[in-house]
Structure formats: C-alpha cells, structure tokens
Image 1 (cartoon, one colour):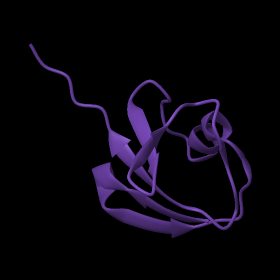
Image 2 (tube, helix red, strand yellow; image 1 turned 180 degrees about the vertical axis):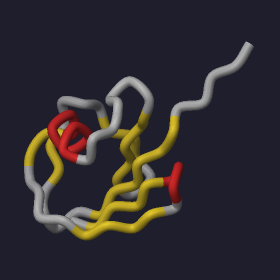
Image 3 (tube, rainbow, N blue to C red; image 1 turned 120 degrees about the vertical axis):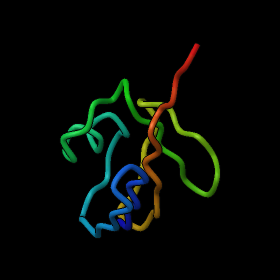
Image 4 (cartoon, helix red, strand yellow; image 1 turned 90 degrees about the vertical axis):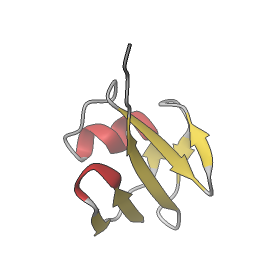
Length: 64
C-alpha cells in the first residue's frame, strides 16, 4: 500500500489490508484528527482498504 501523509508530506509503502481504523492506529495517528482518502473519495474508519490501494491521510482542520 502506498500512503501519503499530508501533515508531514511523508510517503510510505507498507503491507496492509484491513479496516481504515486499524491502518491509522498502525501508523500511530489519532483517528479523530485525520481523514483518509482513496481515489479522492473520503473513507470512514470502518471502510476496508487493500494492500494494492494508494491512500492519502489528511489532517482535520477546525476553526471558529
């Protein structure tokens, strides 16, 4: 799986298939602080990703 982490502009290649929540936790990121996208489509923490996927992990920005 190819992963781009927006916050650090880091690209990673890892072996992973499973639910998005497990991927985020494997990368030691806070699931409440990121959004995961595949093919410009936002995924939920319960969606499944495959080892052949390319995903982007985007930072959640909030403000008032």
